[in-house]
Length: 175
Figure 1 (tube, rainbow, N blue to C red):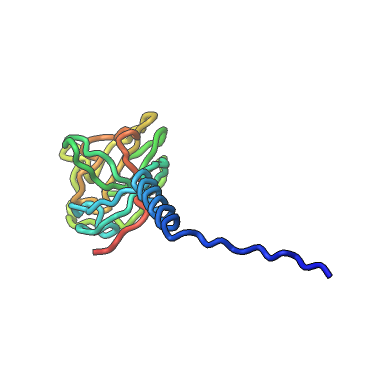
Figure 2: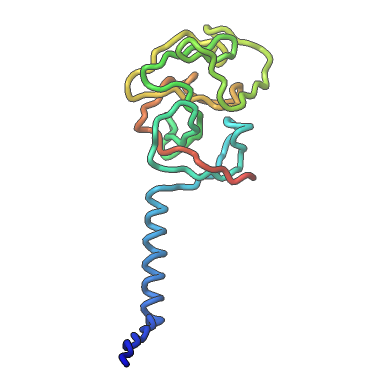
């Protein structure tokens, strides 16, 4: 009678387990920091969608999609960031008529726009409530805050370059 020799299982030394675990944690941390960033929201311009004081998780690789909530560099303040929603992307047209945003000749009401001021201002006074039709150039987009009456956005400073967008908000840790 022949018997097969039993193979003994070799146990992994605890030191090797510790090294592999530490390496995995470091690699995971590096990968996470390359792909994601967390930011605390400092303003109310995106309310009610994103509340002031909330922490958001931003996926750094940006995919230019209309209606995405994005993190972008402030157009006038160095090292400052802002969170806004993309209303129009390159080659779109956008206009505002009595607080209604029209993109490519169709109404656009993404998010939950908030209006705190019942007045409607003419174009000559401000572009907040009325804005003549503009075409968005290549490599640019038009961003707005969901709190439309209290948002500093493209209605004031114009379209922003796509390269100024840091990433897309993918999750919000509610306050």
